[in-house]
Amino acid sequence: MENFMGFLSWLLFAIITGLIGGFIGKKKDRYVEGILWGFFLSWIGLIVIASKGDKNASVAGGSNFDNLLLKKDLTPLQLTMIQSEFSKRQKNKGVMYVLWWFTSTFGGHRYYLGDMGYAVFFTLLFLVSITLLLNGIAFGIVPSMLLVILIFVDVFAIGKILDKKNEEIELEIINRVKLYTSDANTRA
Image 1 (cartoon, one colour):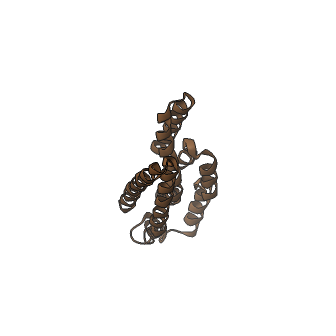
Image 2 (cartoon, one colour):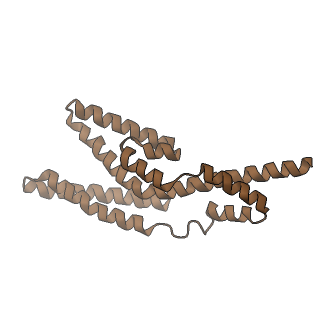
Image 3 (tube, helix red, strand yellow):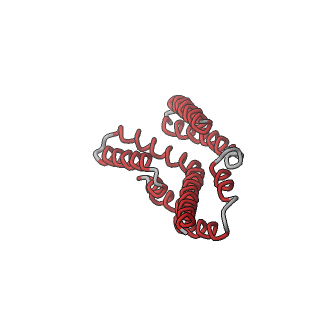
């Protein structure tokens, strides 16, 4: 919830600085340049918010800590099974950032993470922007700017989302291995 509130405060700051920059620029017949400078200043606020982060998330009740507790009583064979399966199924940070770089306009990195809601939203926003802009409708700049803002905000968020996704994958594997080995022990 803190990250969401931080994002909302940054978004409000971006809108206000953009409007102020546009108002100042309008007086000098440089309206667009003023808006761009306003948004540039708001990126500084975004970097500050993103750099704070939640440094204790994985220690204070995060699922990574839960996964460690669950693995505490496992046998070496079970741990090997978990590690083997996890190395096959885990999401790769490098792949995700490459996808962000090349396919972020239509949400390719979100499809990779399995975050279908955001992925479809990115795709639809991209299609609406392109359709409006190619038809010469000036309003197409609004969804385009929203898409650009979301793409740059997303680069700060997707690292944590990937870590959480990998923790969920590991938890699922731990539970399946425990279930499998307990069933095998019961039958023997």
